[in-house]
Image (cartoon, rainbow, N blue to C red; front, side, top):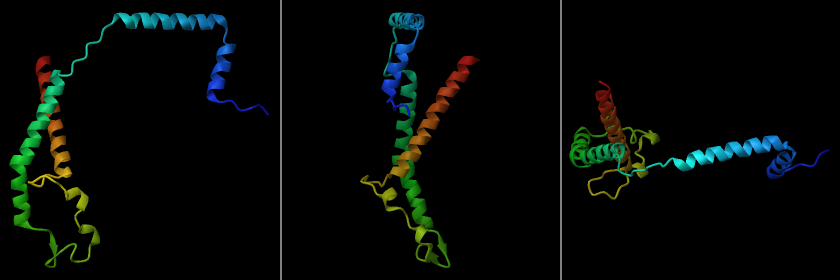
Length: 142
């Protein structure tokens, strides 16, 4: 039976048994890669075109959803009412799974903008932003 080794012991054992030519070759390749990386400067910009387009589309769609479409949607739901069967709502008729999830509809927003609305309008905002970027990219290829 051989004694069990931890991964660090195995790595140390392997490194000791490597031939010196392999270690020298490995060290020279690492040195070349680090020298090549030092010369290249990467410029990171926080406000590039893509970030501004996606953020702007999200802000626009969230504002439209909150201030324009939310009152209309709530009025339509109130006008139509809850779905019924034989004159009773599904929950009143005995379907215990037909009750609205309380955590999904809980909000502190005065107009009642919920997490479901936020996720829906945010995903629409992302889709609009990506559509704008794709159309801009397609026009530049023509």
